[in-house]
Amino acid sequence: MAYRFIMKLLTSLTSPYGRKIRVVLAEKHIDCDLVIVQTGDPDCDLSRFNPLSKVPVLILDDGQTLYESRVIAEHLDEVSPVGRLIPQDHRQAIRVKLKEALADGITDAAVLVLLERRRPQQQQSPEWITRQMKKIEQGLSALSAELGDQKWLLANRYSLADIATGCMLGFLDFRLPDIEWRTAHPNLADFLLRLMAEKPAFSDTAPPAP
Image (cartoon, rainbow, N blue to C red; front, side):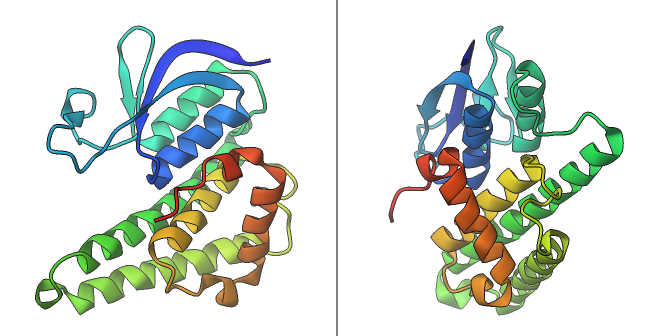
């Protein structure tokens, strides 16, 4: 059964944060109108919906807007009773949110590396890139250790932590393929393969080929 709410999700097909919300919508069986925006278009006035001019943005049926993927994901987990992605137990919920924050932090660092590399070479800061790459490496090591030989990051329970981590790994593949994270962390490589095989929402939301 799909739950229909009169909502719109503003996102881009390449945003890892937008992908996270699209996966959450699918896992929660929530139908939502998808509005694809081109964030690099000068005519794209996202500030009307998010003062930070970033995607994703969820426009609710009363016109209220929610932004930042963690806020949107938590809201969606509450409005549909299907498959809780954040446990109701406080300690378990904090564990999930902490891992989500770690995965999002790695994504943040990856975005900063990408933006720095897009600057003219003479203007790039190798020290800045090295600093962000270290964050990525440390974050991946921490998530790999958390996962161990478990199926999911919260042992045998699929959660928002897995969704955030899967979207982050997909973004590394998409935008920073020079990072050989699979060699360093084979359990994360197996984890991503499992997500793609067992969770249709992941294959359905993969970013378009460059």
